[in-house]
Length: 189
Image (cartoon, rainbow, N blue to C red; front, side, top):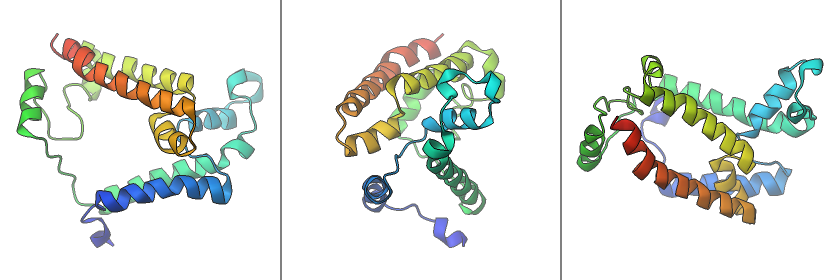
């Protein structure tokens, strides 16, 4: 079975497969595609009735069972891939490595720099701002925008929703501002 994971699918195969999932789900099963709503569904399922916040009070079995099944599949796929796939080698361009080192990030061996994304880093300004404040802002932004980046960019745009186009433009603008303005100020401290 491990031979299945020795090479990733090429972009010209993986991209259309992802793109075809949205119309298949919408047309064949009238199922929405998204991940961010699962937090709401889990809270509605797990919170006792007297303690429920109004936002979490909804029929999660009718609205969320498909999304929770989809989320379970993501975890099962990740567990399978982590068990059978060869170790992931991240290759960065020399320009990117130089730029990150100028910003004070030197441990670039994994998917994320350990100077920022490690348990010990929570006690530093860089780590706290990146993980806690950044995580809160992502969660707030997802709730405020009515979905996450993949939900809007893949499903919302495929469904021709103007709000998704606006959200995707906002995601890109925020990402560019974060990368070129906020991140250098945070990391150079």
